[in-house]
Length: 72
Image (cartoon, rainbow, N blue to C red):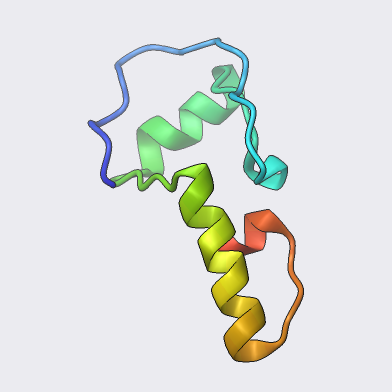
């Protein structure tokens, strides 16, 4: 699901809890620079969508992967 474009300033909140902990990051000064200058779209995945993707990858490909890999 597409999100609205990033705000014009740093959002220094803690990263949310997620099963895809490899993608867990807070938006701070360093990361905000790259987001502001390079990112044109942000896509999101729910926890349920991530788990369903893992199940599909296992059923079809017989691969075990980390939750973060299933997001991509």
